Image 1 (spheres, rainbow, N blue to C red):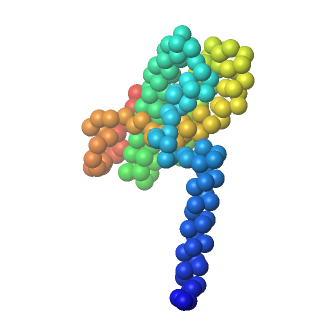
Image 2 (tube, one colour):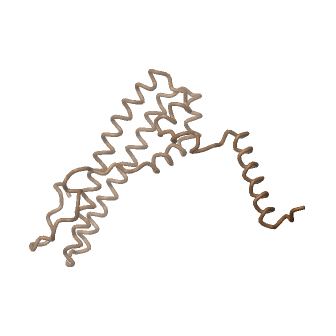
Image 3 (cartoon, rainbow, N blue to C red):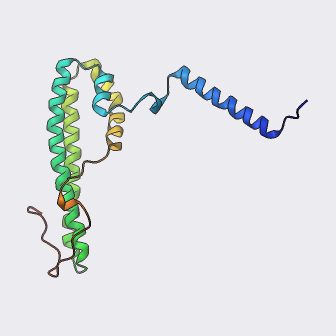
Length: 178
């Protein structure tokens, strides 16, 4: 008779644990990423709230308006951050200039958060009471899903490649309206 080694026992125990985990996942239907790509926030809301066709159409319109507003605010924030970090080229930049830019960056971020709040407030208003109750329970999950999505950075030559060389006259002026 062959002697059972500790390695054989360890492999057998690990095999049993794996089978038990798979059985538990199968029973609970919790396969996570194995069940396909995760739903986008839009699709998650449509599915969980069982939106009707007219609601989906209205939701698409709200999303388009929101996307345009957020893209504009993100572009503005990115321009302000570019201006801020361009100031690194000039070591004699005063703190008031830095503070003014960081306040404007914060204001752009706050405006984006407010736009998102308004968007979801308008979306919630178009739901029936049953859907509103479900929405209230899942909005936290939706916001987490949104925060995990890749940010949409502006495209173009000003954002490709290395930074341009420093100007001998100091940093360029900030974008208009700064």
